[in-house]
Image (cartoon, rainbow, N blue to C red; front, side, top):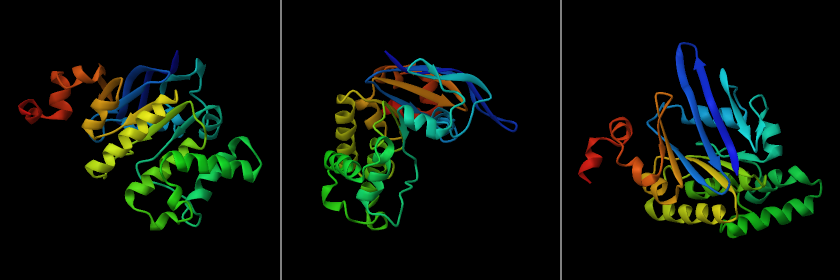
Length: 241
C-alpha cells in the first residue's frame, strides 16, 4: 500500500528552482532515503511534505488523500511527523516532559501521556536521562530526543532529516539498529542522510536529487553504480573504493 505519493512537485524561490517536477512513491513499511549534495532540494522536499511550505505546482498524497494544502499541525494529526537537522527541544523542560508534549496529541490525560513518553524513551534506551534538561545532553542524546518527540505523535510516516549527522561510527551503528526496529513496527520512514553506509544498509529504495532534479530512483545496490549519481554526489574517487 502506498503511504506517500509525490507527484510532479515544483518549488521556486525567486529565480531559483529548488525542485523540478519531482515524483516518487513510498510504500508502507519501507525505509526510503533521499540523498544528494547540499542545496539539492532535500530539506525543501521535507518542508513541503510536512506542510511548512507549499509547492508551486504538483501534489502530495498521504494514504491516498491530497494533503498539498495542509498545514503542519493538520499533517501531524493525520500521521506525519518529522525531525529537523538542528534539534529543537524545549530547553526549559526535561527530556521526559519534551516527549510528553507530543504524546498529548490524542489524550488530555497527563498520566497517559507520561506513560506513553516513558515507553518511547525506554524503546530508545533513554530511560536513565529522562529527568535531564536538553542543554546538558550529548549530541547523540539530543538526536535521540528529537526522534523520541517525533515518535510521540505515533506517526504512520516518519520524516528524518539527517538524524545521524555528526555522530561517530558506533553511534551511527546504534541509530541504524533503532531505525530498523522502528521499521519492524510497520512504520514508514523517509530519510535524508549523508551517512552513506547507513543509507545503503537500511534503505529499501534510494532517491537522488541534484539541483532540485530527481536523477535516480532505485535500489541501494544500483545507486552506487549509477554514473550520474557518481558524478553529481558520490565523486569519482568512489569508483576506486
